[in-house]
Length: 140
Image (cartoon, rainbow, N blue to C red; front, top):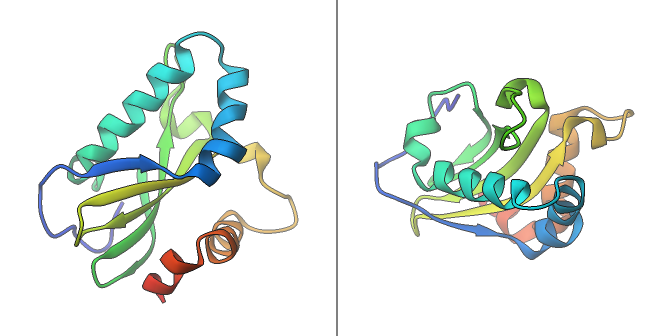
């Protein structure tokens, strides 16, 4: 859930960062053959376009907010898996810019993929700070 309400109810443009595509989405595409991953990814993008509808659900968790910028975690389920979004352990890390109505999917991962020696939120913050420094600066 978001602790800071989004400023409007307009549709957002959703982009998948090349880093996410190169290091994370390829793995999901290999694990889920055929159209399953494509359908899942389109569903994620459709949900995020209407981010205001998911901001009060259990699927979205605000991690960091400053001014008109949000970093949040979005839980998703694989299409046709029969497993709920929360139980699946599949997540996207998303950066939202309310000024430009733009959403960037920065990372897509399974909870089991994370290193065991660091907490999930700490890992996310370090990844965003290292890989997406310009976006991170907007949040601090």
